[in-house]
Length: 259
Image (tube, rainbow, N blue to C red; front, top):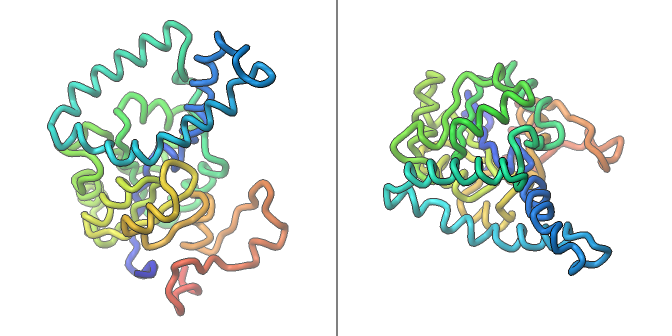
């Protein structure tokens, strides 16, 4: 189904791979961990190998993402994960809280869209990590609602956090637009009755996102204002006149002039 712009009254954003450049952060973390055996890699740099590993595990990760929630063991695993991450950080491994990376133009995107829509964060990250990321880049003022992995009894791909965010923003879930990089984001949004936009800056491929039901797939979140409001941000490597070309991918005819 094409994206129905007239339905949209509120926006729900995923964090990892959508606003936060999680791929590059994981690549950095793995390369940092492998530095002790860097002689095994060409030019002594494990970065290329690390990126290959991260890219290779993303599709299987999408499949197993919701298993702990289905088995009702997500809460204890969350505590275990937090403890493990804290230990790695003290040892100097992994990405510390101050090393969260931002998707290019993500701040300008949420700042611009917050002037027209109420915004929510709908993340499967824990509250501590979500708030740390938002605080680092001063994004929290733009969001009226923040849903993390423990806000509801079930997290994504269940619709619960999207439904909860819609209630908090005072709009029906059908009036929400869920924006995310993975199939669990798309499935959660669609299960809640919302529309969904996939972005290719994180875990999901275009094929996977469309198979999950995405109404529109964009290269990154920075192109969303152009779709919703007509505002175009210049991006690295983008032609100077690219902003004069409307984004039509998946948008129904006659709706492009709206917003």
